[in-house]
Length: 172
Image (cartoon, helix red, strand yellow):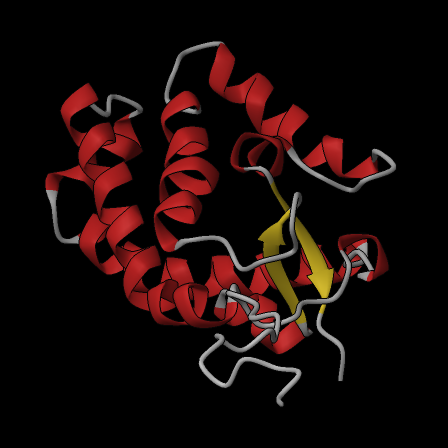
């Protein structure tokens, strides 16, 4: 009588996530664009961080070159909080800091092209490098090596390698 069972479940394929462009199809952000985005972010960070530093004993110790380990740790925490206040929403929602948003670039997973979870951006991209930078002798070397890695073919700096991320251009 009927060729199909009317009680059979639908045979449609259901995908769990929205289709994303193939990881190989995305265009990497240019070095100059990334640099300018970092400069914009740095200026914004400084505008919020320096008032804290100036009105605490941190500034006086820094001017003497005698910043205690406690104030260095406090500086890292305050810096991370300032970073989160400035960029948290845009990083979680769009994978962009304010500087990256202005420059039309975004942070994504190097593996699948998805926006990185906020915890990965904060802990792996930002905090890990900030903590390593506090280690005497290693910190200054890291400060030189990290940005120089952008000259690799995949344009990934040390913080990108640690977090498994890459920075791409946002298509218009």
